[in-house]
Amino acid sequence: MTRTHITTVINGDEVDFLAEDSTSLLDALRDEVGLTGAKEGCGTGDCGACSVLMDDRVTCSCLVFAPEADGATILTVEGLADSGELHPLQQCFLEGAALQCGICTPGFLIAAKALLEKNPDPTETEIRYGLAGNLCRCTGYDKIVRAVQEAAIQMREQ
Image 1: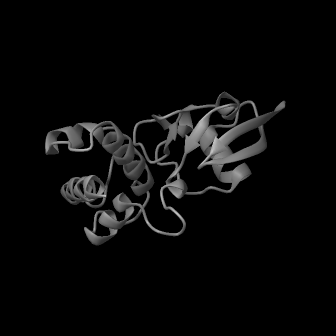
Image 2: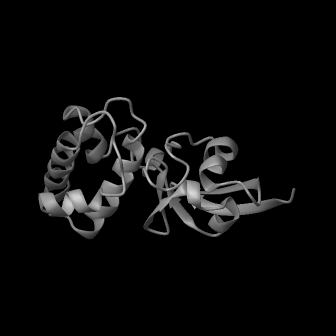
């Protein structure tokens, strides 16, 4: 198997790693880089648990080969917190009990961040649409939507 040298910017830091051409970005993030926040829920891009921002686009990392990330800028859930302080989305998810098992949470946080960057004052319908690529089997969606609404308020006030 051919291993490719990949250089990316992940969570603001330049990162170099080797990965086989057939390795998914999800597996490379977890196994080569040590970032285990993104989860494999389905392996087919249907659940959103493995979502990352790749060049500012929500991307299912299970569907991208690691070499495709060469030169890209990637944000994972680990990159949301700033100097040990939780991002407002993370804090609102905690305070609003918008998570249970945690498998889907990283993907929801990434999708919500992308949504709020484009639309800092979304309606409930816009939030539900923005999170539509993410599935949760534990909490339902109302607490997740409310957490995103509260985070949007807090982020606008900052």
